Image 1 (tube, rainbow, N blue to C red):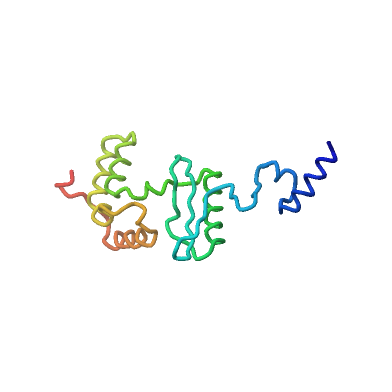
Image 2: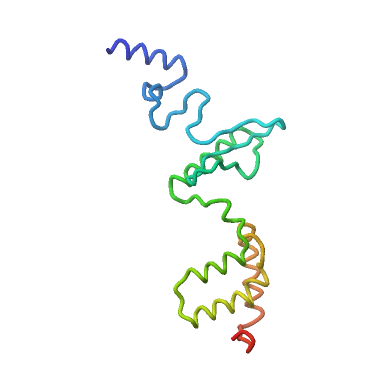
Length: 164
C-alpha cells in the first residue's frame, strides 16, 4: 500500500498538486483549472466575468466585469468570506425603493401608537421628501450626511396640525 501511495504522490507532484490531500479532493484544494467557489470566464471583450452561487441558491454575477482574471478571483474570494462569515447581503434587496423599505420597517415593529405616529411623521416630513422612491442600495453615506446636516441647519422639527 505504501508503494502505491508514494507513486501517487510522485504523480500528484508531476501534475502540480501539492499533496495527496489535494489529489483526493480535500477541503481547500484548487485542482488544476478548477475553482472551489464561483466561476470566472473571459468575455469576447477581453474582460473577465465572475459568478457564484449565493446562499439563496441563485446564480449571482459580479456587478461589474474585471480587467484581469486575478481581480475577478479576488472579488470571488471576498464574496466567499462574506458568505462564510454570515455577512453576505442579497444584492436584490438594494433594489427596493426607500419608501417601501421604510413603510415595512415601521409596520414590522411593535410600536406604541404615539411612537408609530412620530416615526410616520418623521418619514413623511423629513426622509421621504429627500430619499423618496430611490433604491435603498443607491443611497450612499455622503448623501445621508448631507441630509442630516440640512436637517440640523433647518432647526428642530415641530409637528404641524396637519401632521397629527
